[in-house]
Every structure is written in C-alpha cells, then in structure tokens.
Length: 429
Image (tube, rainbow, N blue to C red; front, side, top):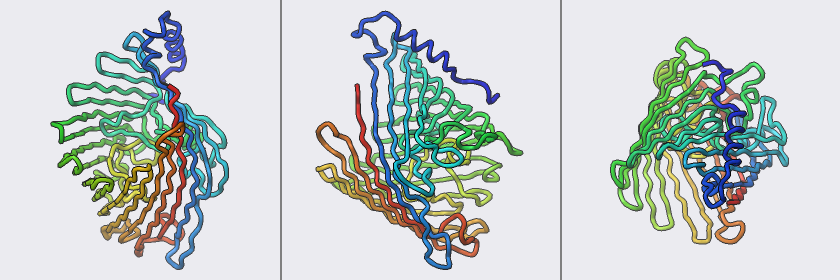
C-alpha cells in the first residue's frame, strides 16, 4: 500500500457535508440534526515527577514540572435518510507553565523538539454509513475496540487514517478496522513524532474481532490482527487476543485476558501478556486484585499491541495500573491490589499496592519492583458544573536493581509522581 494513498479525502467529506445540510427538510424530520450531539471539555493538569537513576546515592532529578491545558470539542451527527452521517472532533492545547519533559503529560501537542506551543489537532473527521444495524466509518477515526487494535489514550484517543466496521448480530458484534497511518493524541502529524524523514513503522495495520455474551453472566472477546512493517527481515507482525469475564454475583466478577504478538522483529517469535482480574464490591468499598505475567522468546519487554513501537498503535488489553511503569519485562510476574471507597458526596478515596518479581536473565536490569499509589477524586454532583472532576494521583515506585543496571540510564531505580487534574465536561446538545 502506497503511503501517498488517501483512505480519506477532505474534498469528499466537504461535498458530502454540504449535500446533507443543503437537503430540504424540516428540523423535525432531519435525522442528521435530530440525532446529533455536540460535547466539549476543558482539562487542566499540573504534574511533578522526579527520578533516581543512580544506585550510588539517592539523587532525584525532576523530569517533569509543568501545567498544561486542553479544550476538546466533538460533534456526532445522526443519520441523514437513516444511512449517512458525520463525526468531527478535535482539541486545542497549550502550556501555562513548566519545564523538563512537558510532553510526558500526554495532554499537550508536541513535536520532535518538545511542546509545539498553542496548537490544534483534528482527532476525528469521518463519514459514517449505516446499513441495517451495521455502521461503517471512513476517514480519520478511532478504534471501536473489537479485535486486537485499540486506542492510545490521553485526554483524547489517538487517530487512525482508515476505515472501520461494526456489525451486530444478536448478543454479538463483529468488528473490523484497517489503517495506513496513526498519530498519537499528543502528535498532530507523523513528522511531529518521527521527524521530517521519519514515518510510522507499518505500511498498514488491520484487525478482525468478535465481542459478545454467552449469557447474562459470561462475556467473551476474541480477535486477530496483522501489520505489514516498513523494515525488517520478517515484515509481518500478527497479534491474537482472547478475553473472558464471568459475573460470579452482582458484586463480584473474575476475568482472564491474554494478548500475544508473533513478531520476529520485536520478540524473535512470540511476546505474550496474560492477566487475571478479580473485582469485588462491599457496598461503597471496591476491591480489585489483578495478576499479570509477561514473557517473550528473546527476553525483550513486551507491549501488548500489534506493533511494539511506542505510540504507533493501540492495545485492547484490559489491565492498566497507572503506576508510572508498564510492568512489561519478560519474565515479570506482578500482583496488583487496589481499594477504593466511594462517598455519597462525590468523593472517592483510593490506594493501590503493586509488587512484582522478574526472571534472572541477561536483559532485565532489576530483580523486583513495587509501587504504591494513592488518589483522591471529587466530582460535583449538581448544578451547572455537574460532572466536573478534580483528581490528585500520587505514585512511588522502587526497583531492586541488579548487575545489568547502568547508572544514569533508563530504567530508573526509583521514581515519584504527582498529578493534579481538573476535568470540566459540557454537553451543548
């Protein structure tokens, strides 16, 4: 597939939009507008992060210290004549103050030199076509999450240039996605991430999956994905995913998730991430306990996605622990436990502890690691600002390094992270 091929043409989108809006119709029977929604959000974040990269002494260095914001706007139409619609969304971002690795926020647009200043990105621009219950989208889109290709998330999801289809049948849905380009939420173009001569590491990526329920308590997801890589002796990555969750009772569930990628380029074969998740509620108290094991044939760290390269495609793996590290080293066995208490006033207090051990090989630079997290969230319950949320998230991470560890380089020996977020959603219609 030629990189210059356009899966989406701006002129076609514009012509279709003019045709829809110019069609004579009363407002009461204009399904394009009657079924439409316009939503926005204002987000602000302050972050301070420091790392100790030396085993000689506790020498913490600040690697992030900033305050940033973004303004998000998204429009989703209904279906004109019950078959043709349009989705548009984008965000504007900027920095209020900061130094260090401001782009670590993943909340502000960046290029290869760092933050790109006040800037705007169109995250979605897609025509959508409804045939019966099936929906096809064409243009700059996000993943529907069925299969093996998911979204890279920040305050907004990343953007694929391609097409997607979701076809429901009974209690099940079939999903397909194909794309020849991807930009992470914090990059506006490929050049912003890879430079003038760089490009995304695949020619195209696609995925087919199925999602549904066997009965009221038992959910299954399965998918397969494929990417044609730009470089490498073996130019194909193939991904597989299987997920199942069983609702033991109204307040208790258990799940199993496995994501495997067959890549000679990244893993010399298979890189596999497996997870077991248990959730239990005790009235206002919720307990989540999750275990994860990661392995690869060449002992490289594993990213549960089709193409390993950072921020080039997304995963659908269900576990995410928000603890500054990915818990993804080959031979790493991790156990996560979190308690959260939800007050009636909109206040939620949470805390988690994660511990892991690692296989002794020539690659891993530490033998074990742990992290402690704490978070406070308050959501306004009534009034014009209903839904506005304030969140403080704290993380302390420690690693027991070994003889493979190199002072002053990645990975760090320990890190501390503090993030304060304000999120203000608004529904226009």
